[in-house]
Amino acid sequence: MTDPILEVRNLTCERGERTLFQGLTFAVGEGTLVRIAGSNGAGKTTLLRLMTGLMRPVEGEVLWRGVPIAKAAQDFWRELCYIGHRNGVKDDLSVIENLRINARIASLPYDEEKALEALHAVGLSDYVDVPAGQLSQGQRRRVALARLWLSRSVALWVLDEPFTALDVKGVARLADLIGAHVKEGGIVMLVTHQEVPVEGASLMVVEPERWSPLRRTAEERALADSDAREAENEAH
Ligand SMILES: Nc1ncnc2c1ncn2[C@@H]1O[C@H](COP(=O)(O)OP(=O)(O)OP(=O)(O)O)[C@@H](O)[C@H]1O
Image 1: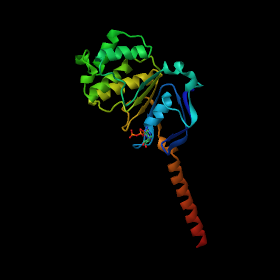
Image 2: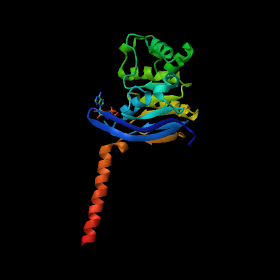
Image 3: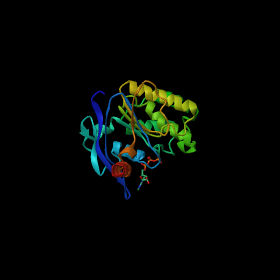
Image 4: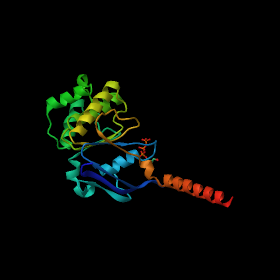
């Protein structure tokens, strides 16, 4: 692996009464696709939110280019494109206005022609001036994802289930874009329940469940069981 750009150190997260994971640690170099995998409720979205600084861990830290993200603040956010479940799409703005305002918020240069190309890529050419509130869920998702076509210069993409609500063509186009971003040295971290159809990328899989204290207890129990069996065998 190249030198890590993104590091997760000893992360512990609690939600409600539960410790979702503890001691979660991994490091990511440039040009890597990181898939966060696991069952419903395992803490995948929570991990993404910790990675973006939207949530704080109970213990541990996330470092971007060697600096804790809370400290790096603007320097980190400038290099981050986060698309969560809620999409961040404004209903009262048209499709193209959504792209314009997102570029401004992300301090990205805005180019109308590129924005139209992005909308073409996500199959929304016929909806440029339609208020986002009049779109279907899948179309709203596409408005959010169109931001990615305008974020090629942004190093880190954090995406929560980006393929959900896309049709086959949409999935293929997005997978190509993600593949291109990773090949250019970007880092894409995403939650998905499916295999990521991206070829030739350096792939890392992170499963928050592996760091769950409940799972450890189960492993410890299995160990204790095998110790008990050995002791029983010796006794006979
Ligand atoms: N606002 C909240 N307050 C308390 N607990 C929460 C909150 N949001 C989520 N949780 C709990 O945290 C756990 C992890 O939720 P999270 O959304 O990170 O899981 P996930 O792995 O992304 O699940 P899914 O695959 O279903 O989207 C769940 O068990 C959930 O009950």
